[in-house]
Length: 227
Image (cartoon, rainbow, N blue to C red; front, side, top):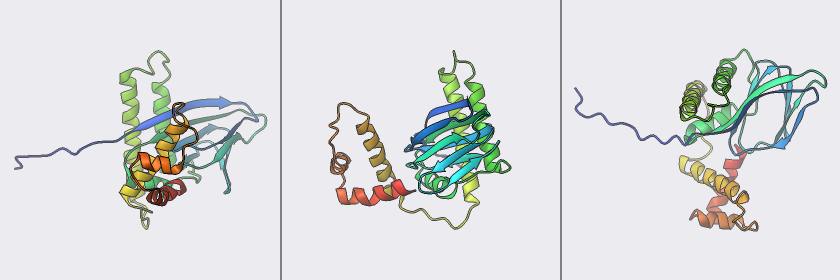
């Protein structure tokens, strides 16, 4: 019988923003955008055209989903000029570099068909979060936010199980390099949005603030932006 059982250190760094369910009119379009996090989107009614810049247009019908990789320039629009369309989406990120890389490398920027397990799982977690947020007076309560975090963590667990079944994928860089590349991305975004920071900052300034050389920074930042 074990006399000592240790607990793992847990540092999830879970982050979610910009989630919503929206019904839009015919002809609706949303301007070109990109984020330094993963975006999950699923259509519940109508058809949406998601155009990945310099790549292809993905037609999302009812129940279809898409995971959009960080840094991906894309536009979304209602495929119909007259009929309404309904979709759900959220943006999220977390600290586990290996899972993040596998999600981006194996699942992102492609159609997730409605009949697939991933689409069913994705639709369920978005519906569960929507139901928790219907009460406007309580959506920012601590208990509700914890419930949302639990749902999102369960989703990440299911994604982890799913990608483990896909063979033949190797990480494009080491965990340390991925973390540094991600730190560079976050720092750039923070400095761009911070009025107290000189807008004329350079990439070398970013690297200096993180105590790394600009050469190393360029090497680890390139794969961070390409996956």
